[in-house]
Structures are given as structure tokens and as C-alpha cells.
Image (cartoon, rainbow, N blue to C red; front, side):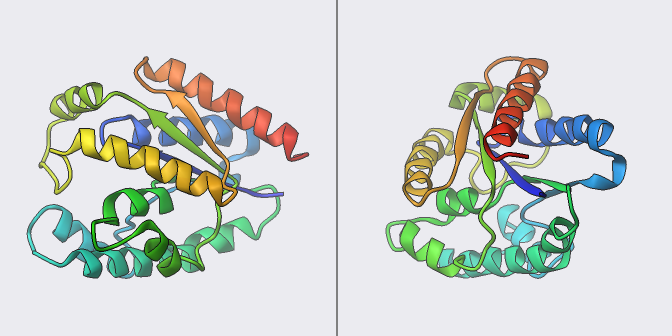
Length: 207
């Protein structure tokens, strides 16, 4: 049976680094062709470049426009890449950001989480989501060390952290499996936590 695993967390929580290291670990164990590492928003698919331009503040778009752009990008990403890969036996997809990020970053006073889920209702449900639980201050320090362009939501870590908690509760109520990882520690410890959780998940699912 194939599996779809999502990595979520604040910008600066270590999502991308963990995703890459997990991919390397499972390629070594399952085979190079059996593991796909991907991410959202995906630049190669529908509306991907548009979304990146909005995040970098190169263009100004409405919140609702961005919501539908993300949904279109996700659907195209699923149809072109994720679903065909998962249709093969014993394959693993590791995705950096997915629906939880939409609930956090697209929800506003005028756009509810229920509406966001309705727009994304056809999106594949992950088998497991790993939430990198990091303090806003630690995430901020890591972003400063990393450098690069400040994106649209970078200055709102505390608010984003609270919205993640709300999104986690929302998704868990709909039956999604979400596990927390202490991401305030070093990447080696974060990686081991993730490997242990995935191993337990596979045993529970009979894989």
C-alpha cells in the first residue's frame, strides 16, 4: 500500500530540511524510485508562478483570489504528479505543505475554514500529517539565519502559530491523523522523531 505524508509548520520550522532528509532515508530503505518529495504551492503547475508572485508582494491580489489559485494549483499538482505516483504499489509521497497551510494562510474574517475545505473538497486526504511544533521566536531566528526575501506572512508568526492550532483541531475533528514533532531541537532529533512516528503509523495501518 502506498502512503501520502505531509509536513506542516511555520515558515522557519524546518519543513523543507526534514522533507529532504526523510526522502533520503526512505529512498535508502525503499528504493530510489519508490519515494517522491514534492511541495506546495508547486511552481510547475497551474497558478504556481502567480502564487509565488503574490507571496513575494510583486502583485496584489484579493484573499479570495489567492484561495482559488491555491486550490487550482493543488488539484493540478495532485492529478499530474501525486496521484499517478501513489497508484503504484508501495510508493511514498512526502509533501512540504498541503491543506493545513491553506486553512492557516487563506482563512480570514470573511473566509472561514469551512469554506476553504469546501473549495478543496476533492483534494486527497493525507495518510499522516507531521506538524513541526516550533516557537515563533525560534522560527523567526531561523528565517533570519536563512536570509532571502521576506514574504507576505513572515512578520505574523505569533498569529500564524495560533491559526495552526485552530487548523489542527479543525482537521482532527474531520478524522485526519496529525502528529506533533518538537521542532525546537536539532534536525537530527527532529528526523528521528519523524521516522519513529511513521514507523508506528505503518504498524497501525498494517503496512
